[in-house]
Length: 127
Image (cartoon, rainbow, N blue to C red; front, side, top):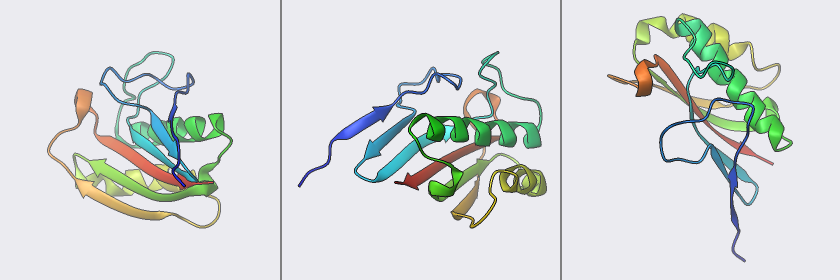
């Protein structure tokens, strides 16, 4: 039996100018595109690593909430960082969003992110 691929479109977060879906639901799995620390009210990146990480996590929470899921439904995260020496700030903001069991996680250093962001976070969640 094949699953239908459904696009997620949450109006609670800043829209990307890139040609991508915010996320895709496929069967019991949810795949979110990488979220930057953009403020939905201004469309601009927050200042600093901690603030961008926190905003990216809040954007993820808002998108998941729009489809009836929560942070506890996240199975896997991938964090992309421009400056790996800022990992303590990322970890602090990231851990603020989890109350119980943490998802699996990868953290990758990159040379550059879209729009001058310093952090980008993508997730896979399950129903």
